[in-house]
Length: 639
Image 1 (cartoon, helix red, strand yellow):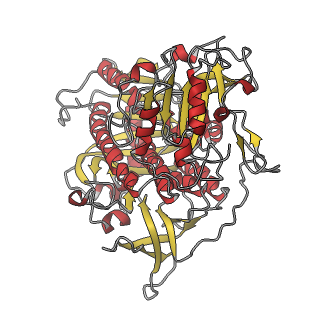
Image 2 (cartoon, one colour):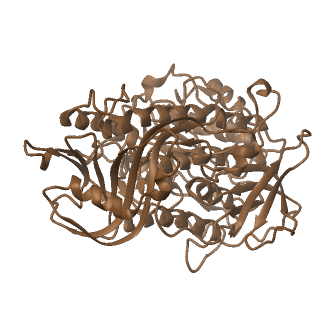
Image 3 (tube, one colour):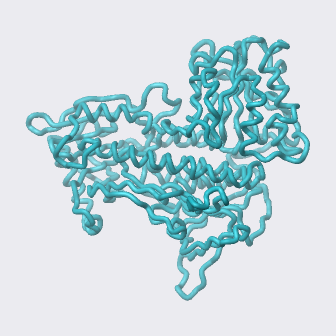
């Protein structure tokens, strides 16, 4: 964490100085509806930009305290690290290291049939963890409140309607009813330039756009319990999957704190269209079913803090913004939906909360870029372009995975025929590992924000369109072991990772040296072309150098100034942009298959690799950013 850039800052470093910027109270830039995972991530991003006016509302009258999702994928922990929250998450969460499988013996009693690592080795520097969704949301809500804009969540604010004017120069109008208001009182109207509906499966924003969740129910019920129990089942502190002779079983998730467990209990098929089961089923029914599945082991609940009944269903909206397909390209969207407002599915793969947060992490930097004038409004078209295919793929994966974990062949809905054997369930689980870890998302090559793959061979370990996979390095200035991916912050900046050629840092033949000079001085350089006058040189593009030599072989003053810039009100040098391989352990050039001739890896603000180019591909660098960025009219930034 860097502090003191603009002068000494005492006290809690997480509490940023209050920007105290006054905004027009009639129209806000962004209205975020819903404080669930998607809304909280977006609010935390926007809050760091006090020049953007944001309101953040929630229909609940108080913050959530119990229940709902709990699985946090490796990729999500990477994202939380960009908010400087991974350490809090990891301190409190329960780490999943292994998944064990149980099935029936010849008598029908369950026994352990196999075990696998929960996450593939080397997939991420962070683990798969478990934490109450309420706690995860609170980290983000608290971060927004401690930001320069001091953004607070306003509870007890229920959306009852949205008006999208035909004149797109007019603001959107969202009607809100405060908790405790009588029917005779007029609704509060919030005017906004952009509205993001993160308000769940019953989204008022989605309904206001005339959209609906489309899809099918599997007509199968599950009970979920958060439980403090006494049991002799030996794997109660493992993630465990229990299958019985029938199609049913239990998923066990050990929860944070060492004693709490979550059970996902198969309650069997329900009649199509049955709307009464969820309201008539009880926690006692769930416990009774669980005890049968645990046979011959005992299971005695002592306290059940939360329970619920849910049905497996996969549903998706036709689009994730307010622009119908026949108008696409003629105007840019102003209303967006994210998370459960646009896609719902089972809890089997643990992806709902994780994918929801990725939705708004994708959208947040784009809203910032447009509102700050860095990009035209057309950049916002890429939200639906990128995220709806991801949601569709999630639905398809969930249908496959939920069927398999529920005891059916993914290609059939039959409850009795074609069930995979226990070894088959284990195999399906292992094959799905990259997806459940959250690292399988891929934005297509050649799309608006993803370059071509002509030079992919220069950095095969950073596949274009996938998330940037961190690796160990050593920071030159202080010889500190570091993870390169941890330079990413949720600050809407692009990262330019320049992996050096073999020439020494001081050599006139260094391609990295020439790139650094071009980035700083050439009118066609994105740094010069898109950084506002008077802003820090890294305000939009955060450039980092990774040399092939060891940290004892040269000094920080030997590198181009773009990697050692003067910043802030005091013009202080930033010493945290230059790295070398960890030659005593794993050389990042070998680990990530980076060509020794050097490579430039361009990474988006949401941590996805956008392009891989040679160090001297100046024309290609210029052409790539010209596709979606707006040049500034002023001169170069300070540096």
